[in-house]
Length: 217
View 1 (cartoon, rainbow, N blue to C red):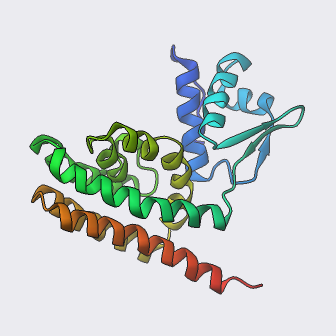
View 2 (cartoon, rainbow, N blue to C red):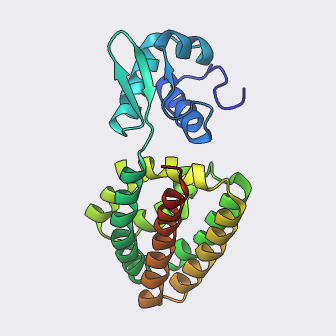
């Protein structure tokens, strides 16, 4: 067990949150799975206090749901929920990309290259602050748009990206699209950056729609 190793450091609630978040993203805690607080406390080697604090944060991100006297259920996004999230992101992230081309510093734009390398090394398990989508939204210069994209919407969408990121064609295509977006941003071509980001998110939605058509009725 790599993600959910026992915790011995001081900030147990923060570390428990990170371990559980990583386990959900990697699929170690599978969508729809139900697990008791007692089991999680044993697996992480911590008491119920910091565990419950971590679970409250995850519940606030809508990644888990706590059911009285039954334990914790890992959220499983429906296809419709994912479709709706991708529709929102197509517009919002496109505009965030436009603003980022105008507002990010040269140093911030240069650092975007590292996001791509981190994604290649970590595959679907990219930490939030090393994620290209997160970094662009975080530094777009509009705090309301940043909060919309970097909080609940981002964390819920990672579940979908972790699932589809395991498909080689999807992963390799996404990496190349990321490179094109970064080049447009570094050239401060706001029109192209917005267009590429919208197309990138639209393709993810189109893949989802195609997967739905292929599903047996």
